[in-house]
Image (cartoon, rainbow, N blue to C red; front, side):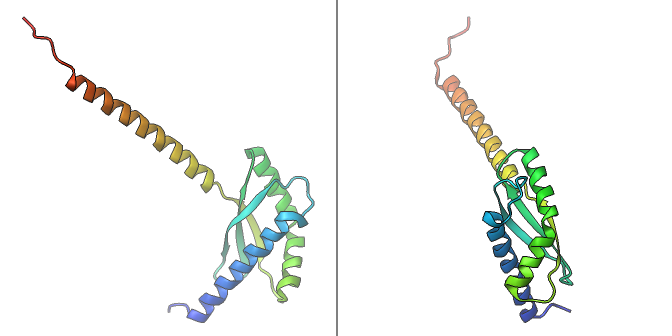
Length: 139
């Protein structure tokens, strides 16, 4: 049976509110020195609403990503309590954090595709020069 439109709409609003509130906390309310500059890229709420996974994009090295993940996991209780007060709800899902590396992967793929395009154009230029160059007759 398909999910009702009202329920889908409500879940979308909850996910958006979670993303906004957690982003606000990341921007200045969490004082853990392990947390590097980062932002929320996606929030996935489980079908029952009992848990959610928050994907974070970290600006920094892999070591800083690991440290940020540790800091966020340590601050889960604080984050859940703050969300409970801000959203004025009884139940806040269990939160887990994950590093979102899709932006880095996409930029790396764009870089590699750019390199391939340059090589392809150089090869095409070389072939065009060879075709246009006069050939010497062989005796």
